[in-house]
Image (cartoon, rainbow, N blue to C red):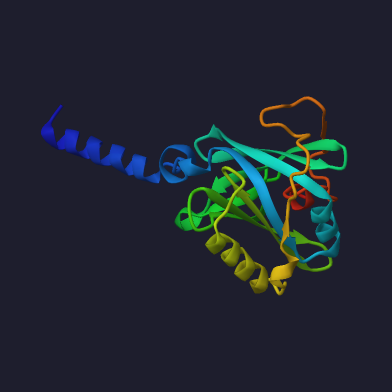
Length: 206
């Protein structure tokens, strides 16, 4: 093969690589993978606020599905039940942002970001009723967050028109939803609008 042909072929291969979809797992957001424990939430919609008050504890697990999507499995304890939800996923958006989406419809539901460090995960979820309502859900690797992260969460709540006192922290009185345990869970229907947990409120419409 002539040198000029090799150069042309190399250029074409490089161009093809540059247009390939970015890998969410390998290059962009590997810190998202694994298990996160629920810390606190705040919601504009009164129904969601009531749901937050009912939550004792919870966690979610994020794992790769393919190069462009991360799957979310959520468990949350409400009363004497451990509820499970897997109707949402994360995909890479413009400028490296992580977008929360409905796993089946691919509809964008909100954003996923770190809060001060890669040990704290903040989900801002948007739900459409008669208007657009937002909710914040804070998760951490070991259930503890710094005073600075609590302060930032309060500021984010205020940006939604909520008071800092509207942030509700999970009490973690009993552990019905043990890490990695799938028994004694009740599966929620995909696309269900009514929620009973962070993420399932909107991730139920998640």
